[in-house]
Image 1: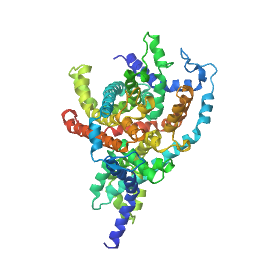
Image 2: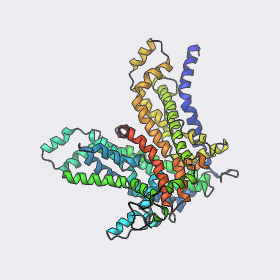
Image 3: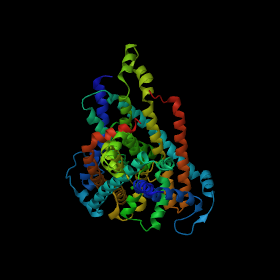
Image 4: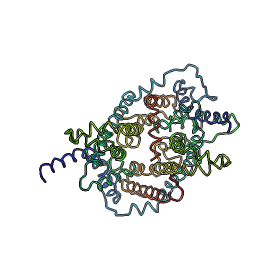
Length: 292
Length: 268
């Protein structure tokens, strides 16, 4: 290379290296390390022992793993419809100009900027079985409140409620932006044709909102499969393992049971599942997502 | 739907959003023994700041708040610089293998944090960096998401602007600093907001890498507090209140921009 060539190469390097070096050190190398670890039995202290694909084989047949995936799925199954329907309802209500709209929007968004640990602690306290205010309010209307996060049957619903409460504003803002992008003329034309409000919503608004809906579903599933913070704070995976999700399992395998290899293998299984689900959605979107 | 009904629904919803915060404040000033009182006391008698005092005795809480603030600012600033520079290279500096390298950046974007934390912990332990500020910051120095977002913004800057600068004798560094950066300010602001929120709320990585209270950030400090005072809800809520206030102040100033950024992210 001539002198100008070298100077250009140096320029490119100066622009790229500040991100490429840390990306290599703190993302690419750990990725490779994780794959390597997943092929070993390792307690983080003694010598690593090569076990090939045994960790993967063991995990696939392991009831604990299956339970963790089931708990994660039941979390998503409860959370996603709740947050989507709630967010959509709010977005529709706030779509038309109304007094105090931007204030309301700000209020609904407040939990989104609040850290997960705070949200989980606030809800743990609200849903406290003894002296918690939710059960007191339920008592006022003659309902005897459940044990919430202390009851295996109610622990996951408690986590779902807290999560939906936190993410409602986010979903609302995304859908509201989608609604605002729908040209008013479509609605007006349908109104002239005498379509009822429900039919206009069902046949105009929902299809034209489908790109935003798609975005919400993709993001919620990616985050939902990785749910951890709120679980760790509210139940720690309990009671009796009732809310042990996949990431809690990864955490416990590493730091409680000294099985870093199995934990790495499980994290790759989780990644494969998330990737698969995302690809299926992107491929399937042609069937129902309308880009108007 | 009638206007009144509409207001009633959104108003009630707003109350549901605000109440947990209000209740946290009330609980935090309720004297310890009255916290579990039934019926709950909305205007607690003998309200005191005792819980806040206890908070400061237990953990170096101010230091933890400051840690969260400076780590958030530092990680946001680092990501802005490294991402904007890489974005410029990917948008404006052709070189062999550029497409493949960009694909590598994008691939890391899809890596879930749980895949990375265990090997990253092991790496930090090998480097002797467990329980240090550097370990907290390290994984946030570069951001593939930022590179992706800012590259799009750089691509939208008309080439004529660069060319005019070249005629004036400017090199790539001057074009980057004086032409491109000012023009992609909105994208930088959006990314800064996401970066700061991510750092401020981060829990899993600090939980794994930090042990000493003096290096903790707020989410970890709060979780530790909760572990120590499981049933002393006044103290736990006092900690929650303290950790919400700084982000709330920022939010009041940047609300419009935060919401616009999030709204935009869904429209792509």
